[in-house]
Amino acid sequence: MLKEGLEGRKSVWFHENSAPVNSAYAKDVCDVAILPIGAIEQHAAHCPCGMDTFNAIGIAEKVAEKTGAMLLPCPMYGSHPHHHWGMPGTIPLTFETHIALLMDIVRGAAVSGFNKFIIISAHGQVSSTIVAVHKLGIEGYFTISSTWYDFLRDNKTVLKDYMWHADEAETSVGLYLYPEMIDMSLAEPGGGQGLIEGDWKIAPGAAAAPGMLYHFEGTFALPEKDDLDNGTIGDPTSASREKGEKLVEGVANHYVRLVEEIRKKYACGINPLGFRNPIGYNYTDQIKYDKDHDEKGRLKK
Image (cartoon, rainbow, N blue to C red):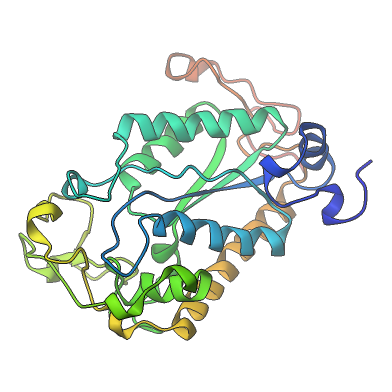
C-alpha cells in the first residue's frame, strides 16, 4: 500500500518519484496523468523565450495539486505555425516530430498504469496536438488536448483585449507565476499586418461568431521575422499580476472540474475507451474490448 503524504508520492511530478511509487499510485489512487506542453519561442524583450512552457507548467501544477492527477514531465519544445519559423529566439519542432513526441510520452506513461491523459498546452500548436490525440485514440488511449486560453474563453471578461502574443494576457500570467522573469520596463505594444481582416478570425480565447475561422485554419500572417517590429502582438503595458491570477486560477478551476468528472466516472484501472490497439490503423476492425466494457465498448454498470 502507498504511504501517507501526497497519497504516497514525494511529488506531483512523475519524474520526481520512483517507478514503483508511480505504478502504485496509478493502480491504487489516481490514473489520470496531465501532460503540460509549451514551446521555446521569442516573447519580445520583456518576457523569456520559455514563457509558453512556464505557463503550461504553472497551470498544470495547480490542477494536479487540487485533483491528485499525476504530472508528466513537460517537453520544452513545441511545434509552430508557419509564420513563426525563422524568428530568432524560436526553436520549432516539425509537426511530425511533435506528433511522435506526444504519442511516445502517452504510450510510455501508460506502461506505468495511467489510463486517462489530459494535455494542457500554453502554445498554439493544435496542428500537431489534434492529430496526436486522434492517432492515440486509434491505439486505444483516452486523451484530451486543450490550449489554456481557448479552454478558458475569457472573451474580454478579465482582459481589455483578446490574447495574442507577449501581450496583456501572457504578460499578466507571467507576472503572476514567475514575476522575476518579466521586465515591464521593456514592454511595449506591437503588432503585425494580417493578410485578411481580423473580423474573419476567431482570436485566441474569443467566442466564435458566424463567418469566422479559427486563427490557425489558414496562412493568415506574414513571417514574423519580417512582419514584427518588436516581437509583440498586442499591448503588454496593460498587463498586471491581478489579471494573471484571475486567468490562471479561472482556467485551473475548469481543469479541476474536468479531472474530477473523469475520476468519478472511471475508477483506477479503467480505460474509458476499453481497448488497446498498438498495431494501429490496419487493425481497427479487430478491436476487442476489455472486461470493463461490453461488446459495443460501453462501460459496464
